[in-house]
Length: 376
Ligand SMILES: *Cc1c(COP(=O)(O)O)cnc(C)c1O
Image: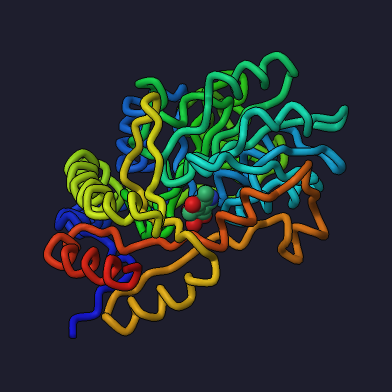
């Protein structure tokens, strides 16, 4: 029996050529020629004002929390149904995550519940575009502007996706992208901070360069560099950027192949949904997702362990996530829930993610057939 893993990183075949070039360039630290190419690509494709590669999306979120000026006691509104880094970045600055429930359809933060979570201490709203499906950016953008809050997009999963035709990552003052090997476009570990508020750009460079004005120095804008602000080392080596460049060049092809796999699942489970056995992802007309992940919501939480176990016995590795942050030990210690978390709790117990990687095509009929069988 062939074992079908949950994820299999896709390699374009050009990665090592570019890594070799980076080696030959003798520019191995950050911000070399490959990093510059990646920055230009990200700026062109997302329409963001400025892109900066980081060593992870987590690192980009850490930078966003510093740039947003989060101070101890400041509240940051976010969904509970997300990866820990969304919250940790702000907790590290002394911020308090305030968790808001998600929508039943997109599993994104419920924009109608955000206003009730705002207090005099609220500083920022962090949206997460789950599975590359856009949050309701019109309403959330309006609300953030009206209430004077910083808007940050955790766009870790969202490179290549759009809302009303506008790329995700271009809505918030700041956005964070991930190139972790489980995402669509990868460098093993990796990420980027996208900066749409020009006033934050200069400080972002400084924070990323250990609190120094070294980037300005290298551009010849000043004659010596020095310590000017807080910061850390958030920039990746140009070797990693070289690897990433091979992936960015192939981003459209990667996207197209993932889209075909996603659609085959969506068509393959139409009958299962009609029979009420499981629900498929909902894609609203104003959103253009990027086929980041495919999941089913089972009718009943008690079925999930059995379903995953049956697939495992059939050689298919299916997984679930997230354990909601509001009920996790650290979430309870550092944050609080605003209102009911009933959708988050109900969804997170019923969600199952299926394998989605380039090359799965040859096995996908088997996966679909085994899922149907397990849900029959
Ligand atoms: C993957 C992911 C992250 C973390 O990305 P890293 O690059 O691994 O740090 C953060 N938030 C969300 C929503 C993610 O899916």
